[in-house]
Length: 272
View (spheres, rainbow, N blue to C red):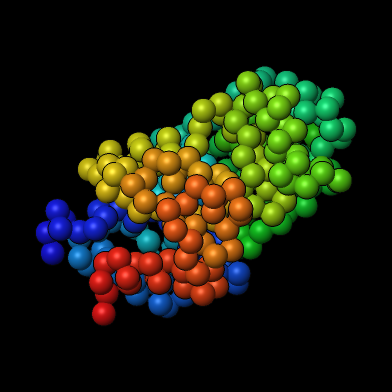
């Protein structure tokens, strides 16, 4: 099929809660659907909040060798060559100031830092609890003074009483002029370089692939996917998606445990 005849030239998928099931795997049906649309001439790109170091085991496991957008847009990663094509870091002075402003409003936070680089580890400060299915995540406990001792892509923050949405709202209100704030999953509120989103990273990757937002269908499940949906021609929220993402989606499909990505691809691309 000519790419001009395709309903979408690019399929952009989030990982956790979207492409990955609750068990942290990609179903055979979803893999088959992605293989079928790429055989027709469309391209598939992974767009995830995970850093490249955290994304690599998943991509290697499914034989993905293309470009991936990692770290909420901070990193464009060539999975086949295991090489970073771009990398954006968080200004550490601004990060420290943002943390101080947030804690002045909310009280003490538990903080983790995602170190920059191809194999950047995550340093978890006192009290930080990891809530994810991230197999292979390079995580270690660290003292507070270590967290910003070297370049970082982003910070993770948690609060003992506030919900993730409440914490993100509070952080945005007092520090939103210094850093970006996103809620990316259960227990995952992130502080990012100001202006950085999945959409900014995806637009960089899309130019390399020769495609546009208008030709893209995007799948996601969390509020950090909202900019990607606004950039793409069509945004599809998973059945398990956060209400804020569902509100801006063009459609809602089945959940990540019910092959929601495959359900839409099979219908839209006319897969038999």
